[in-house]
Length: 293
Image (cartoon, rainbow, N blue to C red):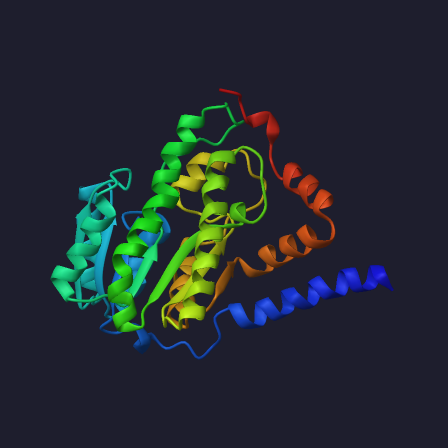
């Protein structure tokens, strides 16, 4: 009986999570029309695709990334797709002042903000951890502390609009995997901070939603370049992933798991058979293709 309960209770939890956290069919693109949205990391990958979806939904867009030339192309395409407006601010989130610069641009342009989508990441190697503590400090600045800084800067406007914060995390922030220790540490930090902040919002009756998006292997250019020669399973499409993220944020959901079925199986195994899951994760890598630095 004890073993049955040990299996059924986590399974029930996952079924409930699937029901409550996956975007239902009542999403309507009208929800985003005229909304003022910041998207970080918007020059490539999931961020770029989110910008295009939001443009089709006639949102006002402020896009950020490091590379100005790429941002210019994305903004041009967004305007062609029907964005209510589209502009960009280029810069690096390694600069501790940049998050505030981006939010100030939104305030000066729109006088308010409805949705903050935090998607950017800094470079981190895919390899055995080499003991470089300095690298972890650097990537924490981009992947974690800048998220906190942007949230703090944007919060007054989001409180005024009863807005939404959408945080792109990863299964690497829930379950440890080899070869990504620095990256994984930043995602665990995001999960802890925003989950705690959500609790405080509820206590203080702050009507700002926080959606944490727990993503698996997606076919972005950066991911494919970094791990396609090592990972055995196929990635999920970034276009669909981007749309699911937007839906979840618009519907003010607590969490999104994508791809759902893969994430659900992993979370269940993590609860009832963590060592077995770890062995499956290791088996998914072509370890012989990972060369020590």
